[in-house]
Amino acid sequence: MNQQQDNQLAKHLTNKGIDSSMVMGHPAGLFVLFFTEMWERFSYYGMRALLTVFLISEIAKGGWGWSNGDAMQLYAWYTGLVYLTPLIGGLIADKLTGYRKAVTIGAVIMTMGHASMALEGISDAFFFAGLGLMIMGNGMFKPNISSIVGQLYPNNSNKKDAGYTIFYMGINAGAFLGMLLCGYIGEKYNWHYGFGLAGVFMLFGMLQFYFGQKIFGKIGLSPKNLIKYNLEVKEEDNKVEEEELPANVVRDRLVVVSVLIVSSIFFFFAFEQAGGSMTIFAKNYTQRVLDGNSGLIFKWVDAILTIFPVAIVTWVLYSLAVKIYKRYPITILFTSLSFILVWILCIWKVNREFSIEATEVTVSWFQILNSFFIITLASSFSKLWEKIWNPSGPVKFAMGLILVGVGFIALAYGASEIPQGAETAAVSMVWLILAYFFHTTGELCLSPVGLSYVSKLSPTKFVGLIFGLWFTASFIANLLAGYTGSYIDKISQTYSMSIFFLIIAALPIFIALILLLFNGKLTKMMHGIK
Image (cartoon, rainbow, N blue to C red; front, side, top):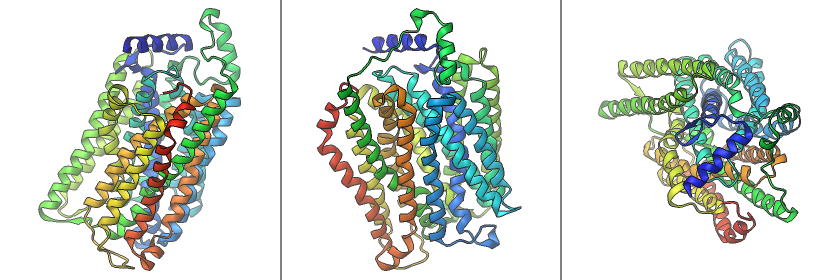
């Protein structure tokens, strides 16, 4: 069966004109996308890790001194709109630019956005202009790079889910490094440098993609260039792989996609509390000043967390470089330069922490846990789906929803001793760490699987649009998450912090039970897509 899948993949790559070099059993092009998305997520999550903390930090410490409620509402609109503009970006790519050009355009706009935010000290207008550019650039970038990943594989390939999981590891490697380095430099050194650093790596990501995009053959070309490409290849290699599907099959599959998209709203409503209410909980209610042995233990744990994931991703880069360096040297050059800079920053950070006596955990540090768990667990989940147990999409979604709910139940228990209406507390770090662990396992069950199912169930002509709708669901979820987070003070004063977290836990668990109830019907409506 595995040999048959490999042969099917090889034939698919040939028909699409994709470079047939394989890295870890997957097309080398997957790893070019891996590093492009990695640096884009570095820039986005590096900035997001700072956003709420910067807004609510005291003016004396370089922040803006906003209230929790006001900061949460800006956070809601920013993180929401970042996921709404992909609907427009997907349409533009489908009809005009093609996926590849859209990715490049989006990366350039986001680089400009980070540069603008780094100039916040000159005028507040630069800060808001930077947010606007980030929103627009992400709209062109986000849905279209995901579309390219899906087209590297035949629709029924078992490797497709595994490929998206590897791609998702790249997303989280970038998020991890962004939150780790931008968060640390912003909080402990200078906010502007933290915002600016995010843009440097966005630029590296854009350059390595631009110079390596021929690896994708005809995938992602504009409609005009695709016609030109098809005229240049042999007629026998230009057969359309996609069969014409009956209308009822297309309709049923779109219904399933719609159900999964709506379900994802409830997952990300809870999950995206990470940059909002969970950041407030980390700043005001968590014991972050450590001394004695606990401080020394944290320094070693932090050092391992800093170095180990970078070493893993460096090995992935080496594996890719061995395969494609001769054909795409500039791509490997820019990616290598970016990694040299990352290693320098990581070693500087570790050395700086060991050279000072006091140990204060940054607020943004907790957000790296999600990405760290992704990096360490992603390959295990990939092997689970590919070789051991591969349940239906709705079951995987239900698992994700339940696990994110369990994470908030852990937080609710940890917050149970915080007095009603308390503005500060010193709860153990353990509960936030546990919450991020459960949230991550839930994310691995739902998010990469969701990307894969959107790709497999969507009609080929509209895959960019459907990916845009997938991210539109995240717009709704982020908006709800931010506005719900803005009520953290009010609910804590009226009831308790535990009640606030239990409310968030209840919604995704309820939706999970509904998905399990209708699993059989939804699986049947996929018409053979697994």
